[in-house]
Image (tube, rainbow, N blue to C red):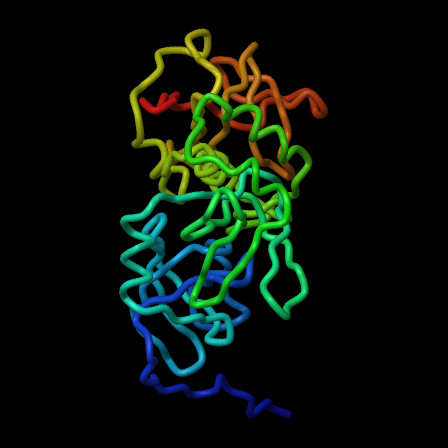
Length: 277
């Protein structure tokens, strides 16, 4: 007996806004407009995007923070006007530096938002900010928000130890390797591209492992020489990275040595230092 099931046919609709913002977190970004499609990245709370197109149930977007494209479910779309989007483009980027922070809106139960989430129009005295016309207050720990502190990269990265690996993930409930690095740098006020091969073009080359400083990046290749992994140097020949989970392993000129399995897991191919760090 043959199934007659087929994918539903959708047609585009006219949306009232050409821009949007994430008010849930994390919001999955998928390669194709269906739930079964690969998750390629995520939006964190307060991250803005442009609407590229839609098919009636899914919206294709282009993210403001890292210029990443993909599809989000229409149910997760929160539209904003051009003025709010442009304010996000030009205004200061205040981000959550705790693993999770608690926010609330009048008449709504509190919610947790992850590290790297953005607080548009944040007022340091009151802890208040506004997203998509709704007022929020960050309850904890708003006094720890800051605009930039690149020298704290290692300290911030260590907060995520044991967070699980998740393809396309950018939050403590699941990171991929480059999503982990991107969020850590974002917390420090440094913008990085989304994928490891893109991040490997940033900054300047470091000659050898012995020249590494805390906060430098190591990139690792497959047998074809393609960059497939990234980690953050923590000093003393060690690296913190997300492989299975966020962990600290040994690093030498060969690559990453896993002390649990007693073998090399990633082949070193490039070391980089960002000027800001």
